Image (cartoon, rainbow over all chains, first blue to last red; front, side):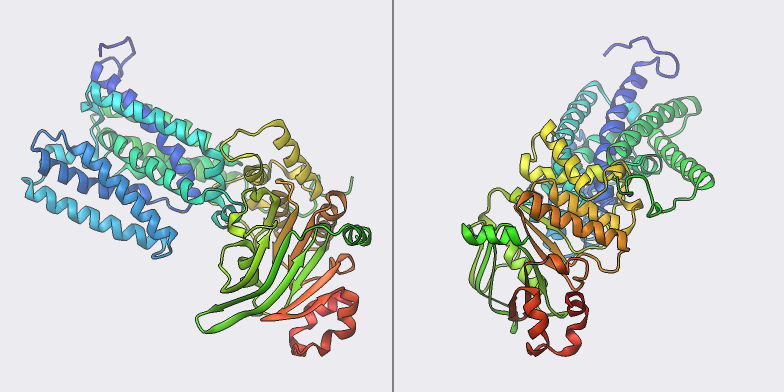
Length: 291
Length: 260
């Protein structure tokens, strides 16, 4: 990949790779997150991230220090873990919250043990934990973008049934909608997104990119579709600002991006609160009257 | 609605919903014993009974979410779990409000009602948009289509759920304990919407409720359930016989009041 002409701070190849990879994450993470927040599974991204960490540990153990098995193993662990959480939740074996905690802690514990067997924490393991978009190579950029395109396509194709299922699962089941299928698609897509975003924002911050822009979007928007659009817009803007700030001031990029999304939420929430309190509509509203 | 019943009688149509000798128990506790019920096109039927009488369980058995221990259930002539076109059934769940984390507009919620009718994998077509618009109008929410559902009053939210059920143009509408105590305006709109479905579209309604005052004059039949069916007939007959049905007096007032 040769550098295209972009102004500072995106003038160098490594910054452009970081920008493309981060923008891909910035688009698909909040799209998925809008459905996850509505499903009250905001922390699932974090839980799957921890399970993926066990996969990273297994990959390093199986494939050696080059780490070429880390990503495939992380993906396998994440998909199995996501389906496991969903299965526990759907079968009511455990609440969504508890199901998450079970996998979350088992995952991180297994990861720590596997990493210690494989030679202990080193720089490459830390990359997965905290993300390092500035070191992604051309192949990784292609993989992230390709995964992102697939994720966005799946989300758009199934958005209506996904919206129905995450909004009102019981009703959707009676209406004969494919509830199990929709939940499975969402779980698998979430797992793929976590692994795709791992190198960019890191396992510990992936969930933040899924949830924080949505938190901002729902402050501004009045519809589900509007929330998703605002979330993507805020996320993309935060990615650009965060990467620029990290280059200019030498900050950790993943953390900077997430802090900006959190800051955006704080500003929006305060602005909303000071402008107009949220009151339920009065019973007498236009359209209520007899024509 | 009398005409609708007369039509049904002159050309008897197959029941939309039929239960014969349905029995169900949670463990050793019998909940339903030999329940018979049938609902034909154009009928407006209320299912009433005291708390714990098995109303919700019967509903779940009828809709196929619980298997009957014995007996036979037919929805549109088929076992409920085999009904391919679920858009023929409209369902309004028992819930006072929609707990939506993310804002969702009335139109977005109502549009999900089209999924089972038009195919959940297809994009919305003009006919779907028309059906959503018609559903909103028939519950009097056309002016609130773009409002977030969780900013509406309880009665308005309930009508949004009815509109979602209407959007699939159902032949049978099942309502599970719609909330009581909503304002008079919402009660009137609620009643008008159900009558609209029966009169204008020849649909049938099964209303499970404690609170029948808003719709009492429009009912064709009342079914009283207390583990088994104690009464199944026109409301006028029930008010004559009601209190001698072996139901404890204290169990009755709420719904009986509405029928006087």
